[in-house]
Image (cartoon, rainbow, N blue to C red):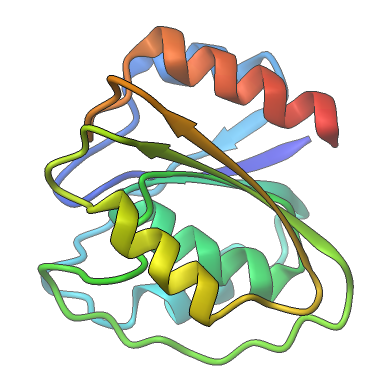
Length: 162
């Protein structure tokens, strides 16, 4: 299985987390400069169109980008504290129509002081998509950074549902 992992702003995929994901398949994790590339969603959709990606995983800014890439490819996604409501850098948001039922597992940290989980709920409530099943996990005592233990639990839960 090919997995597309999208890191957060100024981030990367930690080796421990890559090891967890590699249990489920081949991991693509491009280095993305969200600050200078305002069109990263469409560029990534084009870049990986021939890779037969089967799942999209992203964190923070990568969760935001992953939300739309999952729609473009009509794939399931696992999104950690996605920056859906607002971002500190500008990104162009394309419109993708997904006529098929897709699955999005969204993990929100109650103690996140970077991405407000209430604002994410507000965004989701206003943009509920007809063809999307949402599984929203609200994690108490979870901040913006995702510890390896939480990452592993959520990844296991995600792949069990696929």
